[in-house]
Length: 357
Image (cartoon, rainbow, N blue to C red; front, top):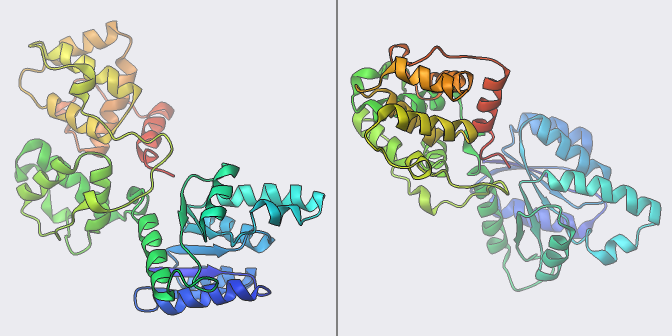
């Protein structure tokens, strides 16, 4: 893990706090410190930072750091050091207070997590309503209720929680290829449907893949596909790994629980699945629909006719395009021709952003 700190050069308490963190994290992370914009930009690239930890909240350099983090796709953590508490804001001139309020809310809303240094600061920050992902870690510089080592360990746990959130965003090409191949094998129950040469287990980031599978409620399919393909992977209990989720996140539910059980009419069942998946596309739903499309009793002509009658032909065609990309649905099992247009892009975006903070 690579962590870049940015802190004001004119605040001794903050600098001592950061120095304790740096010393405590040297065994578990690569760390660097910047105290000005130029140094920050350079080190953010050179270090290839995974986390930018911004300290303080009343200087322009902190907002610039947040914007740079977004541009470089680096996740940010903020410790305001009490500078957003009411008494601190009241000390500012009215015009500066209004200007700083806009700046602070802009960059703090974009943080993956906000670390407050005590109960009072946490409560007053929550009252602002700027960011719900608030953690409390006491400051070893100003209190003996926590040791420097404990402070560093708790901070590292927050960093790991940040990196274990929305892991799809961080997946590289080998991991994405492996995921699709694993899901294909799981759907078919046979490794002969998968080109295993495309899966290099040495390059797969298993932690990210398995956490993503857990958050999308497809871990059972992934585990089965891994067994089918006889892949070597580490044992990771993803149910015990903490992560942050979007405000409106809901764990995906099986389509049959939403659309009702199979009643003996395959066309009717497929139509119900498609109706629900069009409204709320999920990877779990894509897997379940694809499994149904591979069944022998699917009547393509009848399904196409029913889709046309229901006004779902184009929507279903976009779903078919999505299935071909996400779970490698074969052309011979597509009941209608796929459609790739702007609304298909919207479906892709919905899937991609399901776990986005």
